[in-house]
Image 1: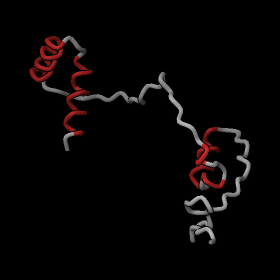
Image 2: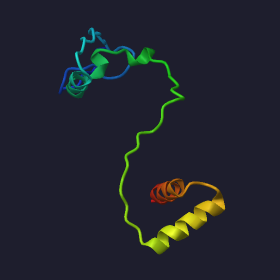
Image 3: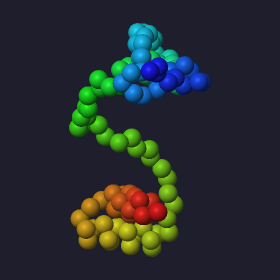
Length: 105
């Protein structure tokens, strides 16, 4: 039985009988150069994902971005009162409310 390959890139598709030649990953001078490489190359030609092991990165923090949000003063005061009642920072309460609303969609 022969291995199936992607017509687009000639990359082996799944199955234990698929031949997966592994190429050496090139050395990159910058992070931008590496990002450009991986955006244009299929990783399965370079990495045997069947041998990959799970990794835990407990100290990573989600990326955040500061935004400016104009709120009516009365609304902001009500949010701060609710946050104080729950004993959490008001910005954290706003984030939790936004997350809950989006997850409920």
